[in-house]
Amino acid sequence: MATFEEYAALIRALAEQRRAGEHGAAVEADRQRALRTAADQLQRRLAAQGQRLDQLGQAIGQPRPGPPTAPTAPAPATAPAVAPATVLPAGSASAPMVEAAGGGGLPSYPETVTMRLALPSGGREPAAAGLPAPRPPEADPAAELDRARQAADEADRHVQQVEALAQRPALLPSWSPLGRATAVYAGCAAAGALVMMMLVVASGVGLVDGFTLGAWICAGLPALSFFAGYLILGRWGRPSLAAAAPSRYAQIGFLICFAAVPIAYLAYLLIFRVLR
Image (cartoon, rainbow, N blue to C red; front, side):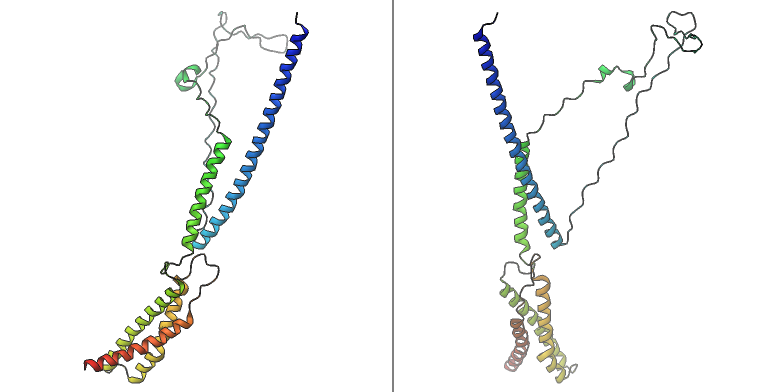
């Protein structure tokens, strides 16, 4: 018979187990709460990331692809057919007997009825088909959150790289805005000077008169060069993610274009006279 000390020791052991269980439950509740908080924060971060990716896709003209189409569910498996019972002649020991009970005509069956079932997989027994596959181990939520967080960090790094590239224009991306504008206007003015040289040659053979040549040199070619540079800077000199149109330095371009073509004509005359 148990003594009072044994009962007291059992009560103390139960109390310790209860306190350990309560402590473990509290720890598990804190862990679950921390996991839910981390999951909510990651979900908000991924939602903001998706919005930013949508903005980048719209900026480059690539819309976000839609969700993948769900695969078609396979047709349900057909239940195995049951072969009808074989009825033996009356008088046989194993034949099922059907007798009318009273006036209701209810059948009365024998103690044993032999039936043949159509088994699947070529008539093999269910046990011979093999044991079911073991269930995969459950994933650790904390480890999955860590992997998702690492993937989000990697996506953030790629987004920052894309944004840095999108802040640079396609035309002379490593140049400063002033240097880019100066180079574009100078190039357009050089193209205008080449056209001017062709007009001078045409004027020498009598295809273009002096008034037309002077009008093109003083106004026509400089204006065309200026507007060509202005349009080029607006089309290829603007970053994809620029909030506002970049400065095209119209005053500098006007000075370059309206000075370069006449200066080129004067230089042509000077060289022609020297060589003469």
